Amino acid sequence: MVEVVIDSIRVSLMSPQRIVILKEMDSERFLPIWIGPFEADAITLSLQELEVARPMTHDLLRNMLQVLGAQVLQVKITELREDVFYARIVISVNGREMEIDSRPSDALALAVRVHVPIFVAEGVMDEAASIPEAEVDADDATEEGDERLEIFKDFVETLDLDNLDLPEEDPSN
Image 1 (cartoon, helix red, strand yellow):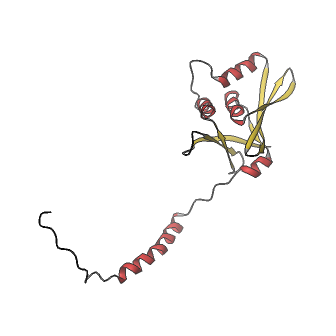
Image 2 (image 1 turned 30 degrees about the horizontal axis):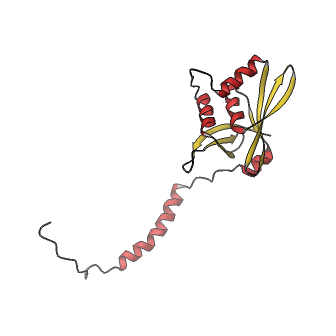
């Protein structure tokens, strides 16, 4: 298992869906997971430590676990099957460890509320994570742009603008 943190939540321009971006702790790999807008809001509210007047669903879940004497130990994204991510919430009750099946978005919303680590199976990271491309060096980009502009410069220099018949200006303008 690879430990990750929530890097950001992004909005899709193509749909009402949101994307939670998980970042591997010890590398530059990022794992995007599509989530619903309500779960995105639940995660965002907790990350920003905003207080709400009444408990939201994930606050209720946290409160119930606390009242029942259960402690959340960690959250794990365990599988990716047919483009669907699967997660488990690991809890301890009376010294007994249990895993509860969960959607990743709900598991993440709970994890940020109880401040527990988030892990992703190595196989899931290998299959779905990506490493951002290195930034383009500004000098390289300028040289490349200059090379492409040479074509236009050559073309403009071959134009014969002296013999260009321009229409006479309309005196009413």
